[in-house]
Image (cartoon, rainbow, N blue to C red; front, side, top):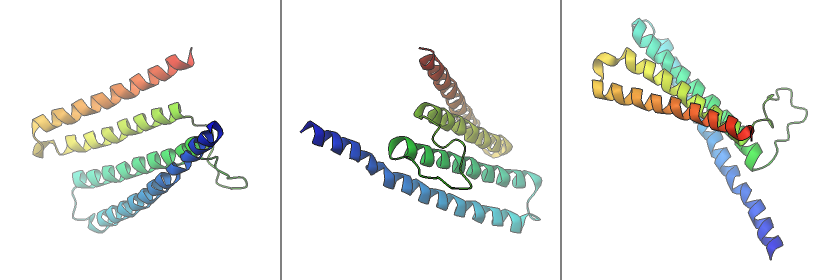
Length: 163
């Protein structure tokens, strides 16, 4: 009975495989939306002022950061929780595959969230004339929470490694 239960529990990790496949589909949607926004910027660049161009570019940077975050979560999560990635012979092997544990993935996720929040906050400041002060304060407070959480998580990881 215990052996059967152990096998079922071990096989349950494959439930996550479709989840990572779904994130891969989300990455495709993100790339599609990136290029739609890019072509809109490119085709209307002469009608935009400098501030509007910068805001559009910040939005594109957001897409890139979120895409990188998705790639990290997809590969590292699959490798840590489902199965080893068989990439022998691949010419474009990523150096960090197989080396990122759950703790380092969490830290990278938190710091990616801080980066995305920073880009968003920069956009908020550029549009601050049209945004109420209480919303700006809320965005700043949320960003500070993200920064503090990322720093705390990194500190906790260091403390756990020193034990």
